[in-house]
Length: 186
Image (cartoon, rainbow, N blue to C red; front, side, top):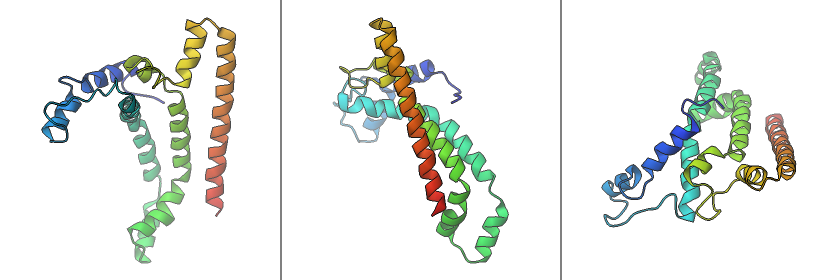
């Protein structure tokens, strides 16, 4: 997916924001009274918080693309449909359920499939922010394939793992297309 900022820039911005002593996030939590003055959260060094941090970074980084695609899908719905539904007495929830969601099914499918694939191929953020740590808590499949191929110098095994990973994502995407198609037939 196209991104405005590179993974390196995003990662280093968030390393600064999530820094334990003087980081922007901990400071904001203290000023809001959520975090005690003498408490520090080690967002990138505690196993329970490391994944939350990676997810937070990734969502923040990728939400712009998804919003643009969803906005384009919403702008493609004819206004006459909403006007007719309003004249027929449909409320906001009914317009959402019977007009917006069915019209957005294809766009939602594309966004969902792209996000699932992007979630499985997360590498840069994890590598630059935690290196898979603490321990191996944030180690991803892509990182494991990378380390197998380039650190352990087992290129054949890494190639095989990449192929099976590709097949897994292909099957998962196919199942998502089937699920969305079946939902539309009901």
